[in-house]
Length: 495
Image (tube, rainbow, N blue to C red; front, side, top):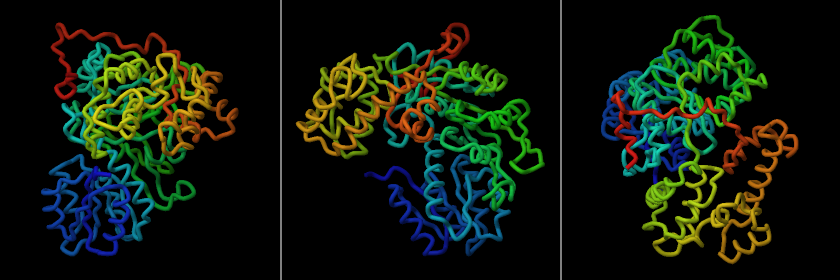
């Protein structure tokens, strides 16, 4: 697998560097190393890494000197500090100045791996959508359809304004890309852009991640932690899956939106911040408000500026361009040289309903590329679920039995057969249960006999669409460019 990212380690201990190399090699990360303040600054200038891991104590000075030099060269580069127990206050000060996080020696390599993943993801998001698919690390908004043109005009109108934005759309439509585009075209694009998935963290941990905590605030709080609202001062914070946020955390969020003030968990000091908030959800917030699971006052503050991301089935004319874009990117990643799709294969792609939206299309293209013999993707190389036609909703229903699915995969020499069949069965099962429960994940998890966190992860991985009755108020009002001088942003050009 090709190297996707570059990390600079500034540390003078060979044992520490060796351990870090082992962790990063597993994640397909290129490592460059410096051991002094002077070399660290010089290496950063030449290597331009995506993330920096920086020891505070270096032979010729303090890591803070390297950090301040990096902030001048690139205020958005995520920096992870390594510190001894006696210098944690310095690390906390660095976080207030915009450092990403810090680790205390001896470094826990599992924690390093987790933080590195998050830092690399933050670095990727801060690059923003690119004009052409020539940079392997950059995603971009792709599409020529009227729906996408109107959405991009709205992004262009809202990006320069210092307002919070609510991004609505089904799972897999690209809400994260929209958030990155808003940030990239905003006046805050030289300051940090951090993202948190609210559905992935339990309530106490999410509150700590957002607002920070004081030492002893709860069991396991062995040191003070600076939260994302404090780290992201002057920048932009993206809260994905905000519909899964607990009511207690929502109450604190409301105060942030009102006056940009908060207290760390377990603390009494009021902290002033300046953060632009972008929030996204695939849930029906009107329904959650009616059920008392989402605060109405928070909802109304969030929805002042709203962008709805269209589903893939609403913009089927964009499918050929998207498919070829993913083929182009995967050619580089997989070391292939495929030239495109046959007309029949493109018809199959456009006829399928794509419940998992763009994310599912991306996976389907990659799977087809791995199966293809020759330079062109033919219909027989597409996943069976896609070849089923416009009424086909799953791998083992809609006219194709489980038996025939297995037979088809065996005849094609399918590898990893067990996982593939289980995945198709789970897709149908979860879709049916979610339909029967009208999208109630608590009830669905009880019926299935799995916990809600596992259910959410499976829904996301399988691209299963939640039942959504979208109210008319959530639709985009067409934005006319006549008379307002707005244009589609330059690097959101759709062709």
